[in-house]
Each structure stands twice: as structure tokens, then as C-alpha cells.
Length: 407
Ligand SMILES: Nc1nc2c(ncn2[C@@H]2O[C@H](COP(=O)(O)OP(=O)(O)OP(=O)(O)O)[C@@H](O)[C@H]2O)c(=O)[nH]1
Ligand SMILES: [Mg+2]
Image (cartoon, rainbow, N blue to C red; front, side, top):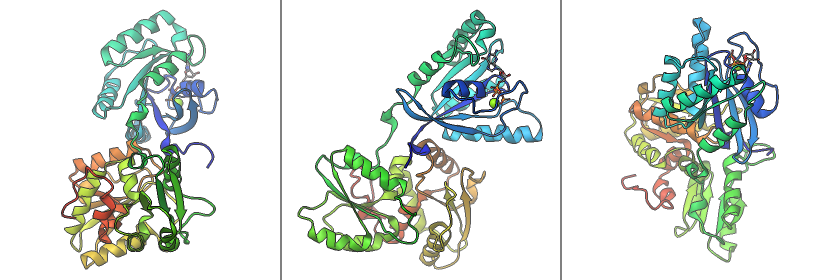
């Protein structure tokens, strides 16, 4: 896997009116003239992501957006796209132009950032045109909005060093990252990872949650043993010591449950992902809603990535089949794929989301918040499958502070 996956990078987004120099600042920070820059307002039409290493923060992705003051039919669509970027933003850069008074657009942007608790920094750009005025304006904006504004110039002096430093200072720290499983194990522990190698497994590689798990086990000073589901029973019998934990792919949960002695803690990659990316408690509550599903109910299946469909695809074939048989009748399924979610979530009785390995935690949490606001329970694939196979209580037992009665 070349480089850090986008989903694990800090997402830093640039917002502001057209022509203030958002794309120019992104270029200046990355040291590459990749984003299109021009004096014509409305040059950037779609959000553009660029991965880079921002030392000492580490791997980040910079997101350049279309101006918030775009007009007309198309302009409104672009502004909507820009607003959607908020859902995945870990840190926002609010860009003004030297001499431009912040107006209602900037105020409503800052209100949206505060409501979502997204940390922010501001740039008073084109400071080369009047350095003294830009410095005064930056000081006034810092006071008014309550986060630091710095004078910048994408094309001359004073440069972008102050902005780089402000981003580093305001970036949410690692403390916000919830581990996949590092906190569940101790140095010296043996963890068995069950990875089915079937037609659904990608060619020549492992998927991201598996790779992340192996890395976290090694970081924690443990040992990772990776086995196929069909070899698990024999491997467990031959092990001299009992493993501290078994983690399985959800799709073979029933078999792995049967083959893993009850005294060995067992969970799934999906359940670890529910905690790592979102909110395990909320999703366990969502699982209870499966019990009250009735034939005819409308269910949204949301998949964040747009990978190739398998013949026995989990989202379009397997989960619908298992759910139909569980409720004893047909359900009305709808699917959402990629970055877009339907605007009206209140139409659904249940949302079943993928593990979210290809999106960042911020976006997953935004989606959970939207589901909660609409009063719709949400689960992920793995929690849904574990519930349907009757193994959810066991799969949640490694998480000691969770209330799991009645599942
Ligand atoms: N003097 C000066 N000009 C700048 C600066 N930054 C950007 N510009 C110019 O301002 C114009 C707009 O820059 P862009 O980077 O395309 O602005 P943008 O905010 O991305 O604009 P849209 O994509 O249209 O929303 C270009 O002509 C840039 O060369 C700066 O710091 N100083
Ligand atoms: Mg632009």
C-alpha cells in the first residue's frame, strides 16, 4: 500500500468567497501548482483533494473548494458541494481577501464550523497588496471570530509560513483518534485475525481494516497471526497458549463462533470499525431496531466506497437476503453509494452502513449525527450480520463498558 490511505489523513478544507486565493494557498502549501488558479471568479468548480505530508502533523489531505458566493443555478449546486465538504473536514481554513470585510457568508460558515466543533484558522490573503492593513485585519478577525487569523500571501511576501504554523497549532491531536484494537491488548498478547480468502477477497492484497489491525497489534507489542476461516479450528488447537483475542471477517462469523472456544474473546473487524470510525454504542442500539423491522419497511444500505460488485455482493445480495429471511417477508431496499447520502433520512426505518474504511472518522460521525437527528437507527454491516447470526452479545464482550443486555 503506497502511502497513508486518504481515510486516515487529517482533512484540511479551504473555504471562502470566489477569487480570494483558496487554490493559490493550497498550491503554496503543497509547493505544487496543481490547482487551477485564475483571476476569473469561479475557477474551482468541484472540491479537489490533494494529499501531502505536513510536518510535524504527518499525512494530511488538503481540500480546495468552490467559492461560497457562487451564483446562478450551477453556482448553487457548487455551493452545495462545498457545504458537503464540511461533513468530512477535521480542520477548516477560512480565507478572506485583504480589504474584504467578512459578511453574512463568513459568519454563517463560522456558525456551521462551531456547531460541528470543527477547529479553524483564518487567512487574510493577498497581504502583499497592503501588509499593514492585512495584519490589522487579521488581528480584528481573530478577536471577532475566536480563532486565529493570519496574513498570507500566496504569491509574494509574507508567504504562507504563518498559515502553516497556525494549521499545525490548531489541528486536533492524535488523542481524538480511537484505536481499532490497540487498547484491547497488552504487550506480548497473541491476536488471531480470521481472513477468508474467497472470490470476494481483493487480488493480491488485504483490505484496510485487516492491515490496520496488524499494524496496531505490532505497535502494541503483540503478535498477529493471520489465518483463513477454514484453518482456524486446527490452528487454535495447535497453539501452545490461548490467544488474547480473535477478530474475524463478519461474513464467516457463524463458523468462526463455532470454531472458537467460548473462553476466547471474539469480535469482528466491522465491530472494531464501528468504534474506530463512529459510535459503537449508537450502532448497538441500532441493532435492536432490526428486531422490530416488519415486511414492507424501507431500509437504506449505504456504502461509502464504489468498489466493483461481486456476484454474491454483501450490500445488494447477502444483507438483503438475510434480512428478508429474518423479517419473514420483503423489505423495500434503497442503496446510497459514495459520498452522497439521500437528503431525507427520515424516510427509512433503518440505515445499514458499511464499515467506512474508505472515509474518515469525521464523515462517519457526521452521518451518524444526521441519522440521529432524523430519528433513524443506524448499524453497520458487521453489527447487522452479527445480530442476525445471533453472535452479537459474544462479539461485544471484549468491550467491557458496553451495556449489551436484551440483544
Ligand atoms: N496579489 C496577490 N494575488 C493573489 C494571491 N493569491 C491569489 N492571487 C490571485 O488571485 C486570483 C484568484 O486566485 P485563486 O487561487 O484562483 O482564487 P480562488 O479562491 O481559488 O478562486 P475560485 O476558484 O474562483 O473560487 C488569481 O489571479 C491569483 O493569482 C496573493 O496572495 N496575492
Ligand atoms: Mg479556486
